[in-house]
Length: 275
Image 1 (tube, rainbow, N blue to C red):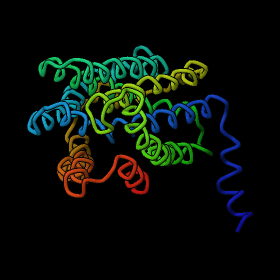
Image 2 (spheres, one colour):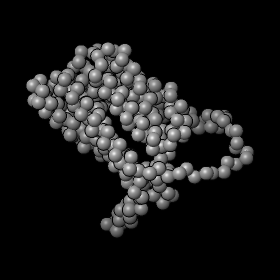
Image 3 (tube, helix red, strand yellow):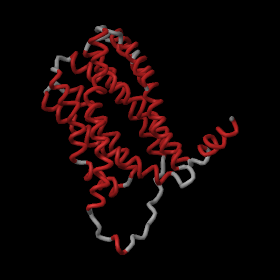
Image 4 (tube, rainbow, N blue to C red):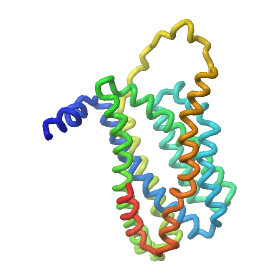
């Protein structure tokens, strides 16, 4: 058993180069920090006096702007490179998220939420091409699997960590542990700590893109009927899942707080166990 684990998992991981390992460190840091945002942003908005209707709008804007500008963000990533695209995304997403908890005008918060979706899309369209560059045919599947697995594990750790922060900031700021100001400092701390992911990204070297020969009969090919059918087949299941998930997942923290009036620490434990 242990020999199989070593042969199938440990040994392939040792084949990752330095840049792939730095990328995974960035993945872990981002996963830990963003889980705190997902845990308390909804609660912060409601504690700040915003309506649930406005909260629904703010949660939908990042997905909408990301969808509308997904292709331009992909072309931008192609032009400037994957590493610069990731670093720009981390910086600009951080500023946009800070804007959502700094400003109080609804129009500005909505704009910042839209910008969050745009720059987060720049990150999403850059990750997979970068992992293709950082891996080879022997360890590529494992790198993709670890990337998603580490995101989940980091989310569990981040939720457990973030759940302890509102009470701490409430004590330090002489405010209620469930006050809007305590949640604002929790979110700001998570955003600022998230910039640490820039360190492994900065140290990482992006391999040069390998030139490939395009078959003569495929040059100039666009979105033909076969490609359109393939896109529909790939998009439809995600679309249907997304409709249900958008109703349930973003608001589970609000449900647990309203229905059971649980503490933030217990909420963090629940989300951690869920991950």
